[in-house]
Length: 496
Image (cartoon, one colour):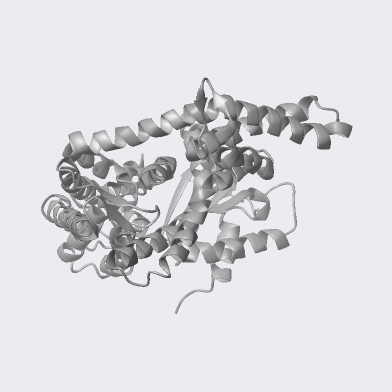
């Protein structure tokens, strides 16, 4: 019996310190992302114990609660409704520690959070904010990508020709205006006025830019793509903030929007569009060269490193690169390679299932998480199986490396495997596949990569990934084996 989404939201709220401790609420495909005023008030053990919670990632005052696809999209509005109905206290409403041990534990958590904030580099923080710009766009990218794939199949089969122009318009409309959405979200994330961000980003796709000449070169509508829109909206946000500091309040409503759009628009037309266009072209050229020249090695490295990026929540920073490639080439060649990490994870989980056949609890976890893993949602298997065990996380990365090398090898032969959208992976990526050799060849190569990832992940875990783990321990969980570490301790050290 499934747990109501409102019940899950109500259970999460007090465990993150109550309504007054929640600063921001967003979500991606699988995670409820919360910005917390005081991370020390969060009850990590309580959150992990909730039936609907598949995993937990905390960093720099943020709390990412892994709920899985679909569930997170339903729990988030229920959580936001609870916040809207709650009293707006100035301080977090928490019971507070009542014993010396509780106070010391709270202080330790606060020190740990402070240390994490000190160790956070500006680059990492910037990448996370860039990810926040693009994550809300993923549902539209997926929907339009699937429709584009269906339309391409109908065109290749020569059927329903009267419908294909309509499907082309439906699939292409969002991509034609994606720069506006990027600009809107950029301003929102970086503290500007969203509609002004959309306004300056719209310049990039406006057909009239074809009448503008820069250094003897005529601009083209869409030149610079999402990177140009991102840069324009970022600049617009800083111009807007500067104006609000210096413009008198009585003139703010008139002067600030005008200067923001005018100054940013001129810089966008005479500098940013050209520069972003060159950068976009360089990204496309580099991706093509990387896989065509060093495909097997590049695939091995990318496939091996993607799971750690997912674990840290940094994989979303790759979205601008994927989106740029889709704009230029119609598909991104990087996503199928990175998707092999999920295949290695599935193979590793299957090996654990076979080897530890007496551990009923762990096998139940694997059975519940495996369908999501096959469809490319890796967090349930990461946080429920491989990461707590330690070595299986490493052997899962080995499986991803093998699958990535397989696809990269065929790229060296000239057979490019790409995806028309971002978001899904695993088996769910098949409807989005595209390439330069036809759908059948593209699907066959991708399937071969998946099978390679499954097989290597399974074999590496079965023979190398379970040393020292003997099975069910005295507390009903996994015995720590010869190294004396509990699964929780392994997970903590592996995360570090």
